[in-house]
Amino acid sequence: MTVVPYRTLLTPEARFKPLTKRLKTPAGRNSKGRITVRHQEGGNKKIYRIIDFKQNKLDIPGRVETIEYDPYRSAFIARVVYRDGERRYILAVKDLRKDMVIITSENAPQISGNRLRLKNINVGTFVSNIELRPSGGGKLARSAGTYAEVLSHEGNTSILRLSSKETRKVPSQSFATIGQVSNIDYGLINYGKAGKSRWKGIRPTVRGTAMNPVDHPYGGGEGKQPRGTKRPKTRWGKITGGRKTRHKKKWSSKFIISRRPKVR
Image (cartoon, rainbow, N blue to C red; front, side, top):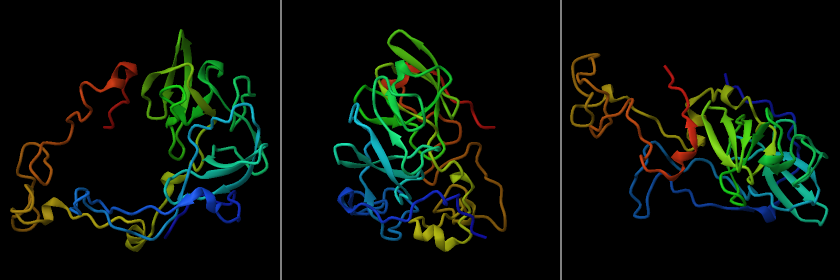
């Protein structure tokens, strides 16, 4: 049985064409046309909505015209018309509704949808679409149901705890949107049939144990066989499972206070 998230809050209006464009679907292929990412294909045609992650129209209120579905992301999006007449798509937070008025400002009220600098947001508030650098556009907490909790303000940095339980520092001058990202039931989706995964551009995944020895380290044998190797490996024999993949010299590591806990 197919299970879809709660979509009754979406408005029936059509998309705003000036803020859309068609993207080429690479289907997991590089510039030479060779498959570099497995299990991807074209899928159904879809139109990309141009999202304003910066929301840099300071002190200009905007009214929410629509709450829409976006085929390119898990969260819902909102179309906002500002007082000067310009329209933009933004990420919708959980409590955002049609005809609500939102604003990006230093001293905006701390209600869902408004956007402020982190230094002006109360401790304990849930925020989303957070900038890692001031004026750099939102980078953190952008997918459905994600958020970050403001833990404290220390000098020029604010300490946030992400929904993954990772704790990190972010510049206090960075902007963030009040509220949790919309479509919090996204994780409950059940496609119901293999065909819907194909519509999404997802090709089938074959188990390594079902392959021949030439195709995978787990392949071969009569019937169901154990793995036959001490450590889990990829199709190309690379060690995986528990190995750290984050670059040791990544620039943002100094801002991470504690990593997310391991899933047992």
